[in-house]
Length: 310
Image (cartoon, rainbow, N blue to C red; front, side, top):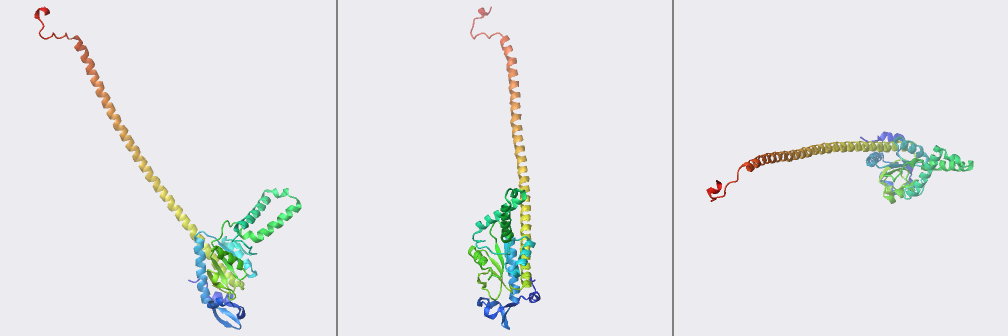
């Protein structure tokens, strides 16, 4: 079943492209017709490509990777922020900082500065600064939150980008391409879709269209995360079962070893007692024979004269 119906796309105005004089020839394959000087997008292709993009987002999220939502234009800003917040995803909705991906180490330093300021506010150490210094720190925090608030917990590069309007967010597209990060994006008739891994031909100036498609992508990410959690839970349960089985086998082996040890000890102990009893019995006979031998007269030597005996 398709993620979006053609009727929903029509009602949202997803089929309206730009003026024909502003088109990009690379979008030719996604254009259905020209009407009143405006290109009309083929919504059947949009429908298919939305599904492909959604499946890609779900697959990437299922691998445990994050998808960064990017949309800084007026029509996309609130939608991107709200949908990303709904599923707990990272987002950029105010301004794309140059090097946000390719110079991520520097961006992380700015994120650390934001967290340090928040910590100072929480533990009260900010009161150690003068009133003027506190005002400057407060303004710095506002700027950092506005620009980096959506990626404050992003500790590593994302697994993919979802972008609204690749013409406006060309820096994000360029950085993602440099790093080999796949891009899912809405592409209008005035853009070049060749650098986009999962293009979605649609009207990127329509608030309804942006909201409709962004929700589908966000739902795909959410489902991928749930699948990832279920897989991790299943793997954890399998590991627990394996450990229990190994524990049982180990306990059985230990019991058998103890039985063999007791058997060996018992065998050697029995033989020792029998030897002692035999030695004790032999010693008794020898001691009894000794007095008898002492009491008996010495036998006469052979050939001795009888007179000597008298």
